[in-house]
Image (cartoon, protein in one colour):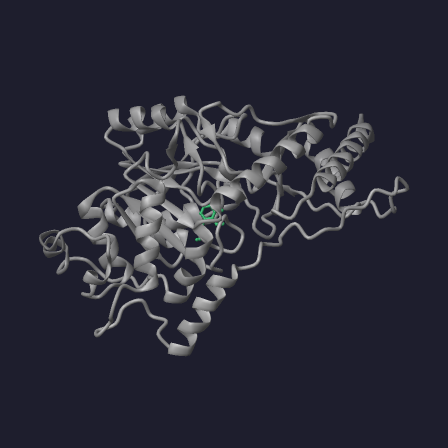
Length: 407
Ligand SMILES: Cc1ncc(COP(=O)(O)O)c(C=O)c1O
């Protein structure tokens, strides 16, 4: 590890983990709720609809789904999705090899076994590998992670999965507001799952949203998330006879969203379009600068993909020791870049090689090659064009040093 102080005078030093403040309107509503003491979404004598029900109605209208259920996290939403689709202990579930730990975690929570699908050089699903594994694995569900906002051709995914009788669940933790071919992510499969954890597009600290058009799935998720028998406090809910089918056979997993979380989120929905525009501006500025660095390449983005990049990823065509040097040189200049090829999991970043609880997987040479060169930078809305230029300059210098080091 190098300890020298860079002589080039380049220093970034801003905190890339910051999030925008909660809107005043949301704070006022949260304070009113706290004064009332009414923080649980259900009540035996509730009057009017609680904040999570209103949020569900607004979010479903935003993405164009029939139902939305507000839950405690995206991890909870994915778990409930698998349960509602009938995943049983020991079942296999297809999932993306490029994702974060809560995704295989949701599968493990359902006592099922992840079967990883290879990732392309553009950080999306390898459709040929999906086709192979949908045909051969016996899995009935594909939990597709739109990891870091990189969206696979969803029409092709649907076509393959439909042909093999595989239901698609979309992990949209990084794609709230994003669309494929004009249609929101999360509405292409049977179920879409979103996150409102602090580092996502809207922030309630913890929180999740699940969308579906399916009456039986919606009824099960409402019951499983923990409504007890107060499902009539959901504005968006299936007919009473659908609940009759499920109310005696569905466990309560206590994964509700609180009134407080929903109150924080509702005013943020209206901010999504301006946030999306700002993130896209930052992405374009950074992509232009990063592409100037030696050995750096950015993924090709399909014109059908309307993405909402709250982070940026790039590949650096160097062996691991030199990538390590690159990361160190960036850190010396106050720029903390994450690397998916790390030998050990660090902070939020891990890869499938670190998840030793998975059953043995088929060799994943392509995913390993991609992840071993994949670098990751969060892009808070506060980044200015000057910040983007400085980041680009640091990446160019650090990549140059890393290249020269051992060549
Ligand atoms: C790709 C991905 N999917 C799902 C999740 C789970 O979201 P939550 O923290 O709301 O459970 C995360 C969390 O960071 C994530 O990064």
